[in-house]
Image (cartoon, rainbow, N blue to C red; front, side, top):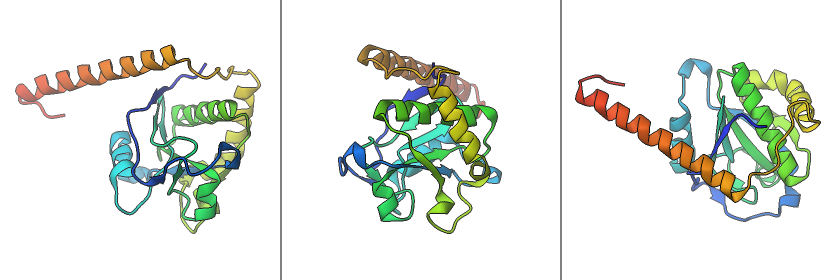
Length: 196
């Protein structure tokens, strides 16, 4: 069973909606959000990829325990730097600090995507497409990532069936409740003069 929360509250403006058939997807391009030293935050990266005018984007933003889905599989996002690769791939933006939880969540996500699509993605790093340091520390572990994805799909950590509509609604409701509780707690702290 997957251990991450899948967040569907976002849509990137930097995409071509329903531009391709799922059968055209061949690659999973691994990215990182920048360098670990810049200490980027999940929410900031999601916001940037949804609203920037560069344009740049991804299909999913990944960190330990959660995934923000920014575009559907059929959408082409601007992530690889090469149009031909964009039209044949899904872009995974990952936490550059890459702890064990980040790596495991990415592996579970890719196993879920492959299970849902009925395909195996050829995983590559962004630097395989253009001259860049991206995906940083993930690049040397892509082989290990492939092995982990395959182990999950083989049942080592049983890859789940796609979520039912009820399960999806339950996860959305739980996430929205957690966000509301966090916002209320933050507002109370601000009223007390504390800053988060």
